[in-house]
Image 1 (cartoon, rainbow, N blue to C red):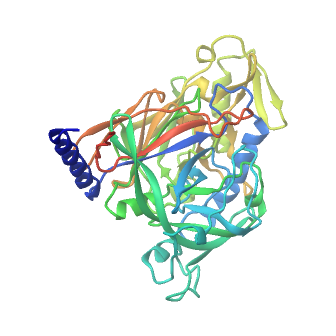
Image 2: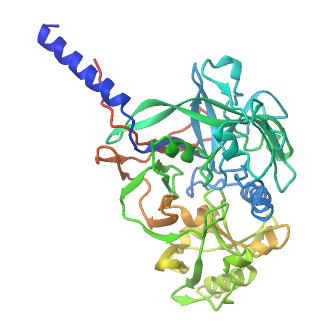
Image 3: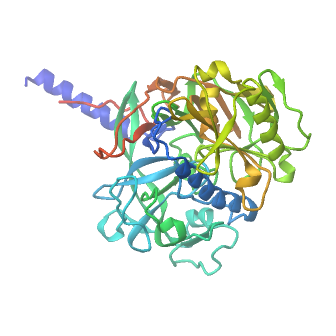
Length: 488
């Protein structure tokens, strides 16, 4: 190499180092796997989906009813999971992605009753603090402990002692452990459809003991990554360090199960928004009306009143959609009115299903949910009717009074209404929004520091070389500093 080229290489390396050491706001990504593989998979186990939602609601609704310390309640049945890398040397872990909880936690070495195998055909690991040179315990006098353990949950937590937690869920399951801080390796966007690795220090829970369904191998992963609103979430930690804004979005491909999950300000597509209901543990919104086939349902004026704990929850961790009895019955009747000669039958003693030949989008009506600020959420027949056999479809609308243990009339909108839409959670401005979108394409996110706009592409990657279970992937990109990757 001549002196001129050598000088150029050193200059570029210096430029790389300067850019890498800059501390600015940006955006971020993970690779998230869809457990069921999307709408196109006709091998869905109906009982598994319903059991998933039932277990989730047992915990989720308990958190709403009983306010477990205000830091969110992890669940063990999220539909999406991602691979994260923790420690030095780095070790990969699979964790559920959950918009309904806050804390990031993983199972730890010698955990009592933590799962050791998974029906998802992934290799489970337990975090070992002694094996990581960068890991350290979080003590009671640290700010993170105050954020994660709230409302006097641990009155014995004194300065210098380990910061411990214990969460009891509505179904009786318990997770107990302590908090740790260690290095995380994150995928950082460095250009259009390009990422490189960056390190960050994150506080997370180390689960030492579990009971109930949390210890089951069904749907077991290594832990949970919560994207809730508390100061203990990974989103809040990154925002507090000045690396990201508290904005994230997901776009779930209904056919293939892949899609996009990004942290950062979305520039394209444009998204209209509605306010979040303040002081709620989950992502609650004000639902105003429901329209079926161009006609509005005749509903009680207070049916969606948030003051009576009847508010509407947007939750990507729930599979189906749950409606109050009066809403469910009217919607069902309007839906079936377009096919007066069709009869429903019951599958697995719980799902209403029907036979239909032809294009279901031509044979059944679009359902429009109308929210505050004139935001509309359209749900097509191919979203709420999912195939289980040739010409046989089951209905995704569920009566919430029959699903909750206390018969509470809630409205909870899950994956069947969120697929094929870009959903944007803007915690900076306390809004949420969505728009119909092709989730197999890319979105554009702005880098805060440079003002550059980068494209985040959709991904559909099979996980962990299993021939029995194809798991699709969503990419969640952390748009940090725009760093040029040099290849010699």
